[in-house]
Length: 218
Image 1: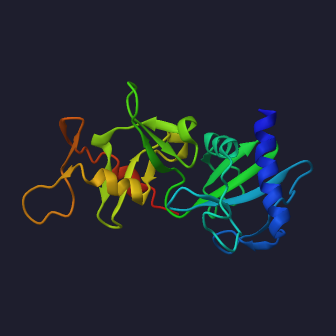
Image 2: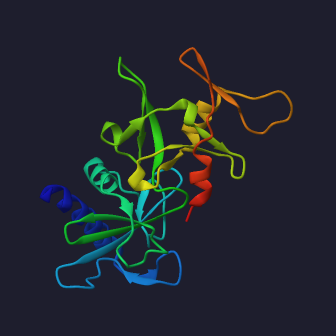
């Protein structure tokens, strides 16, 4: 646990030193400074995850593959601890929190905090979806019948860990691959009704829709 927390602190501090910390708006009119200490021996850092599942310091001016976090240990530690922000601080601007000892790591997201990036389907084990750069260490069982295509934004969603909101976004490249398995009802329907997976034809349950609509993306 200590080494994992050290990975979080080291990653954030290294980027902060590279860019220089500064006060900025945290997704709204709330101001913060990366690495601030609101209480003795407490540090606060602020992050952002985009629709591709890439994690950045929130106040990074450039958010692309070059500037995102890539260290697997850091990403696994960060996302495995993710939960709703009930700290009483920045709850509106940063709805999620990844605590690590006395360190508070606040997170906001472009769409969902969990973004599925790869389908791990090799070998005899049931397929799993990997998320946010964690490889095999950050996965959920793949449930094709519970895929949810959303007509409002053209994106695809799948069940995610409950602590991270219960619904995750499927990265666009992976969503494009999975869309080849969809079947559409006769007529001009914009949404598929079934998915074909491993020789089976499964009706899409659409059971994630109420949860997704009840908690719109930040």
